[in-house]
Image 1 (cartoon, rainbow, N blue to C red):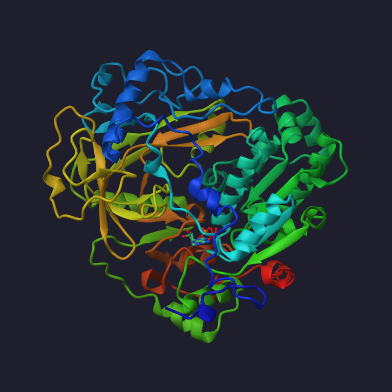
Image 2 (cartoon, rainbow, N blue to C red; image 1 turned 30 degrees about the vertical axis):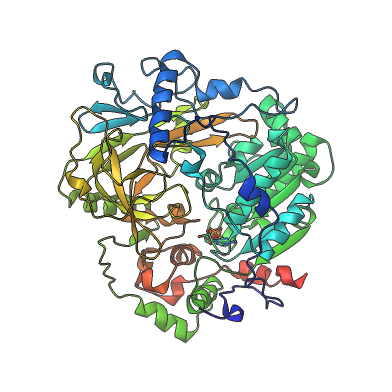
Length: 612
Ligand SMILES: Nc1ncnc2c1ncn2[C@@H]1O[C@H](COP(=O)(O)OP(=O)(O)OP(=O)(O)O)[C@@H](O)[C@H]1O
């Protein structure tokens, strides 16, 4: 292990103190360990059930509830009292209304994928068979809290310092290179703010520049929060528009903290407009009308999409930026990569200033990597078409019957176009086609070893009510690593089948788990669920778009730089990898690795936490 002073650090200026060696507990750590999950689960039954038993019982309960209740998640949220008046009612996962009658407010994006004739079999509450190998995924019942509790986070001293300042009401911006723990910190910030404002949940507005980024943090786009549509009019015109929209006005008035993630993709003019709109609506002269603003992102990553690179205006160039952001921090410790050589290479790349040594090293990564466990790298592409083509080709090379899982979508948005656009931001696809042998990636943090980005392979499809021995349901304790041939486990005819996945764990061990559906939603601060999706937390993982990979940590990555066309794209793609051993780079070309000169200049003004 590298000595503490050689821990991977990535700073814009020299670091005076190394916080990295002390893995201090975060300010919120004590509470993180003892705090209940944000979703209160049903009371634990008297007899302690095993994880799988509990899950199956929940499913059965859900089936029973489903028959007697017609409440939907949405109707539940609509019944919430005014958030300012009292604490919100406990959120709980619920089944939609009966399969026969479509939930009142849950719009099915297209013709329902199921028909009444095809719906008689009801072996498993969380999925619904349409024909022999097609399944409509419907929301499952609440799970035991252990089933999806990610590992506790120990924030670094840098992260803790920022968390404290946010708690003290400071408007600030924190940045840091890829893998410096910005998202991890943001999740802690959101958690602590929500706890603080639990009596007025719409006081905390969680937003991001893009739909995908917003989905990753359970928030909405900044456009959606602000109620500005495309936001092309002037601030005054937009404010007038908002005033006619009661919900949007209320949001602006009730918000006490506005979080903006992935700010590198927020246009500078938009930032100014938002700051001005806040002043107008809240009738206060300060930017954003005095709302505490917490901003994060890395300007060396993807730039604003609205304009061409020559006319790009970053958020830090906004007139209101210095008046809004009272403190700026640069996280220096990199967590994603442990190898200091790799961290330095990525940092050089971030600034677009590669040394001959790093260029030679990146070029040497052209080699083919053979993984003996049969799980290949995820190839990252700038364009979605390439991703689809690559995954399709690999799927068709596998023999075997397809198993199709169709997502169940809900939410309040009625406009089909807007709805489809928002749904497309979920990592989980509408239609997930799997086969035995498919390479998949988990897209949700389930526990300490099964996290977003964990790779696996489909071993087969099993009836979850009669699972093979030694196999747990997703989120349970690891099953034994026995070598039972689960592929041969026969699935009873007429039962709904779920994929049995063998996940690759850190250190090379395996974990076999039956994967059940999960739920994602885009929720406004007042609790209104705009869109939701219930689907298996899996995607095909031979290929992925760079855009969707932003925020991911991947063990095995392949990138062809010949296809990269935008500044920051190469950096985002390569920095997903955790090690040089798991990174293959084709057509490395230093000219593709460019940082925007404005960002480089601006970054010289940044301080590390240690500088303060
Ligand atoms: N305090 C911490 N202790 C241990 N691991 C951490 C800590 N903070 C972050 N990590 C880990 O480091 C990895 C990268 O973290 P994270 O995704 O938050 O970085 P990021 O700065 O948001 O990266 P990017 O800009 O590339 O999205 C993750 O695997 C995360 O679990």
